[in-house]
Structures are given as structure tokens and as C-alpha cells.
Length: 128
Image 1 (cartoon, one colour):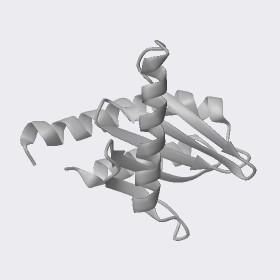
Image 2 (image 1 turned 30 degrees about the vertical axis):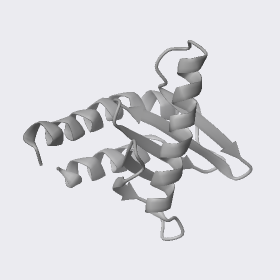
Image 3 (image 1 turned 180 degrees about the vertical axis):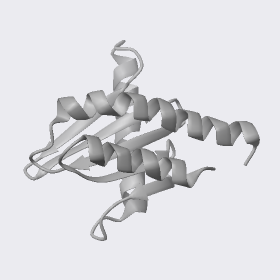
Image 4 (image 1 turned 90 degrees about the vertical axis):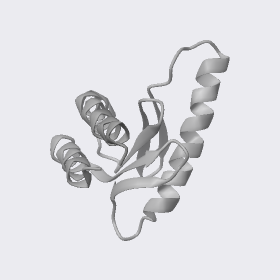
């Protein structure tokens, strides 16, 4: 897998959206694939929690006939965590501070998510 390409995508989001503090890409089962996180964040724990949360949101979306889930956002008193589906087998989590423009984030993530999906799909196709 091209870990450098994943790192470029995560860094690129930070450059495009002010307020992003941490990013990670994980498999849908919660295994960490790549992370760009502060030392105060446990990337493996973040990946597992993000997968659990996204899984519940996916099931809720399906059970209520809302279609395929694209994203979910949790807001806290010091910022937010956005969870994005990357195809059917992965996810990306983006943490941001109070000043992050969430609508700008949603717009900026769309091309990055497509590229991340291609990077991960290429890995699967190559059998790596």
C-alpha cells in the first residue's frame, strides 16, 4: 500500500481546511491504516471508535431507508469529529478544533475520499 500517498491526502486536507487537528484512515473493522495525529491521540483507539460509530450510523441510515451513509459528525465543546465512509471497507476520521468550518471540510473531503478509495482499492487489486 502507498502509505506516502495516504499521508499526502491527510496533509492536503490540513492545508485546505483551517482547524483540522488530526486525521486517520482505518478499515471498517477498526484496524488503523494510516494516521496523522498528535501525540495526545491514540490512533489505534481512534480508529476503533470511529469504526464503531460509523458502523452504527450506517445501520441507522439503512434501517430508516435513508440510503448509503456518507458521513457523520460528533460535536463537542472543544471541536468536532467527522467520520467519512471510504467505499464499503474503510473510513476516514477528521478531528477539528472549535474554529473548523465543517461545511468547508465536507466540500474538501470529497475529492480526497475518492483518491483515498483508489489508493486502498489499488492495494486490494494488487493483493498486497
